[in-house]
Image (cartoon, rainbow, N blue to C red; front, side, top):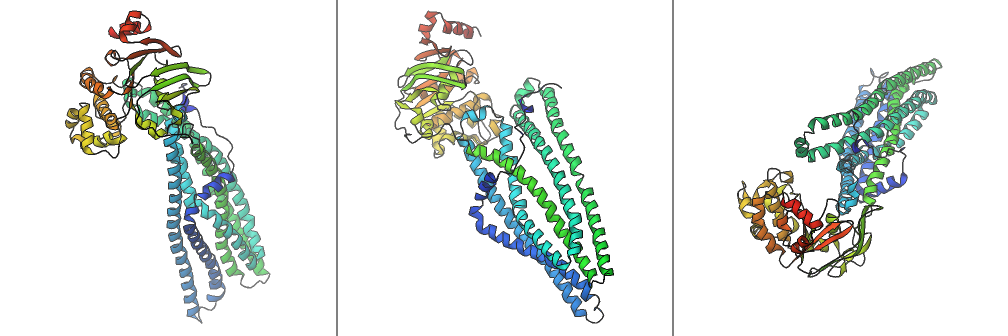
Length: 595
């Protein structure tokens, strides 16, 4: 299938390197857990010391205890007891420190998750405009999950592996420099080979991650748009797209698997080479008359394991550090993204809003060079109802997006009661300006919780009163548990009209001074619309309101109707005035009347 879409466009895959600046910043998250960090470090050092003792006990048993076994059983019993005690201590301490490390690691990751989630709550809409939701989800979930794995499995291991390699090397050199050489001749090439294999895998893994991000983005959109997919008979087509995305991902995954399968034969090969060299050198030393070489050789077999495992793990950790660094860059990129729309030092709280709204010489574009509005002027009196009509893409929704400060103007100013919205605290602005969208979003929870969403401190009685004011009470009481009916995600199971009525009750409870209806009744059935029309009139009375709609019943009674076209106001007037003019609005009116 040749069809390619934005989901086949990978995130930028660059050569990964260890960014010490990001790693240092990551470690700052560990500062609140420094006491636990020190405790875990001490426990791990004790566990390492226990593991280093057992090879020496093996040497002692082979060289001293076994030859004297017939004369003294107590030596054997004491040696075995110490062996068991050291092993038990290592197991017990390792178990305890892993639990502590896991708690600390997940605490740190919880702090990072909090920071990135908080930032996503305050980032402006333009951040999300060109980023599929699935790709953002991957950053918040998969990337941070790998950071958690790094903290719980690699951070302390890296430190202790370095300590273990140094200490084991010193012990082996003290016991036998020649046998130490045998161990190095096998283990160092083994670590190099593992490093090269892991580097090849990591390169493939970067590409595979980009493919997984593509697949996740398409999957999230498919789940959210399931009804549209089925309605437009896109199931088979989307299955093919998903198949291609999955094939794209699987191709790289199988390359990773094939290279990963090289690990076991490489480790086995060099381990056997090391064992043969160790025995050969031990045999040479024995023939040379070196005493106690048998027990030393047995001890060296254990030390070879204690030496090779940390060395190969270090090569893996170094590769993982590169991956963690790349993930950190993306996570911190989101956390560090400055919210282009935020309160400034001059921001003020809105008091009692009268409802004067002014657009003064406003120019705005979503993409540089493609202005939606140019030198746009509009002055609205308190309590006035303004209807916005015009062709799709002309800028109707843009006008209300600028008023609510979902986006900021490129030049000019939007003012409420004479105050530039850029100098009004966002929470205050959005408390006083209420928006009813075309597609109401209901959250998972009860009907009561959804009505209360804009005013968490509202009582049940106030929520019910808001619903009754908008004539939503009757349809809510028909639900299984009335106001306490648990709604599925996005209000699944409710009709479009029922969803909209609940969202209307939500806005009435919020009681804003300026109300915006953005196609708010377009999905409501005609009989339902009649029921809420009188409630809307009550709600809008005395409030400044802006209505974006295609239904004549919601716009013909407006104080002013603005036909938005050609980057500004093409026509303006009441319904009767514009009909008499027989211009753009007249043509739109005839078109809507004929439907």
